[in-house]
Length: 446
Image (cartoon, rainbow, N blue to C red):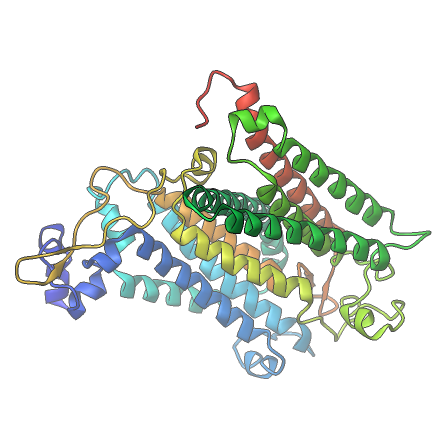
C-alpha cells in the first residue's frame, strides 16, 4: 500500500507503468485519467447500484430483507413495503455519494487542481466509500424518512426527466448531422432514405400511441385530465415539428429538422403514458394485465389494496431502458451543439480525448489531457448522477408513495402532474433552442 500511495503523487503518476496494480488502483493510467473513462466508471457505479436495487424488489427477496435489523420493526406484516424500503435506502446511498462529489468538485478548472486526481483516480477507495454509505443507509430509522425522501425523489426526477430530453435532443442532433455529412460525401439516396425512414417511424409510433391512449386511458364520461394531457401534448408536438422546418429557423439553424422533432415527439408521448399510469383512478388507468386479457378495469388497483403491490409494469421497464441509454450517452457524448453544451456544462467536441503515449521502450504511459482545462464540468456531471439516483428510485417504485400505516405503496396525482409538467418544460426548452437565434440576434449560436 505504501508503494501505491507513492505512485499516486502527481509527479510519479506521469511515469507510472500502466497495467501495474498500484497504478490501476490509484488511477494513474490513461484508462483512469481519460475523461470519458472516468465518466464511464462513475456511471458503472450508478448502474451497479441500480442492479442491486432491482434485485431487492424481486419477488421472494422480502424474506431475506426482513432479516435486516429494524426493517420490519413494530410492524406485523411488511412484505409489501420492505422491498421498496430497500430501494429507497440503496438510492439514498447513491444520491449521497454523487452529491458529495458534486460539492467536492465545484469549480475544478483543470487537472492542476488536486481535486482532479480524486475525480480521475482512487477507484478502489471510492467504491469502499459508496459501500460504506450504503451499509449506513440501511440503519436509518423509519420515522418520516420514506415520506421526506419521496418528495426529494419527485423533485429530482422532475429535473432528470428534462435532462433526459436535453440528451435526446443532442443525440438526435448528432445523429442527423452525421448522416447528412455522410450523404454529402456519397450515396445520398441511401443516407437520406435512412433519415426519412426513422423520422417516419418515430411519428408513426407516436401517432399509434395517441390512438391507444384515447382508447384505453379515457372514458366518454370520465378521465378529463387524460383527455387534456393527450390533446395538449399532441398539439404541442405538432407545433414544434412545424417550427423546426420553418424557413427562418432553417436559415439560422440548418441542422434542425424533423428527425429531432420526431424523437422529441415520441419521448413526449412516453412521458404522457408514464404520467397516466400513475393516476390512482383505475377507471382511467387500467392495469397492464387488463389490457392484455381484456378483463374488466373495475378490478381494484394493486396500489390501493394493502398487502399487494405492482412490482413491474411496462412503462417502468421502458423508463429503465431510456435511463440506461441516456446515462451511457452522457458518459461518451462528444457534441458540437453549442446550446446543449452550455446546458450540460461540457466543452465543444471534447469527449474521449487523450489516451496515453507510447514511450521509446514501448510502454504506454499516462498523459494529462485536461492540463489546460477540464473537458466537462465535474460538479455538474455528479449532480446529474445524483438526480439519476433519485429518478431510478422513483422508477423502480413506480412513483408510489409509501404509506407506513397501511403497509402499502399508493399512487398519487402529484406524480402525474410532475411528469406532465416535465414534458411541457422539455418541449418549451426544445422550442427555445429553435427560436432563440431568431430572438437574440446579437448572440452567436453557431
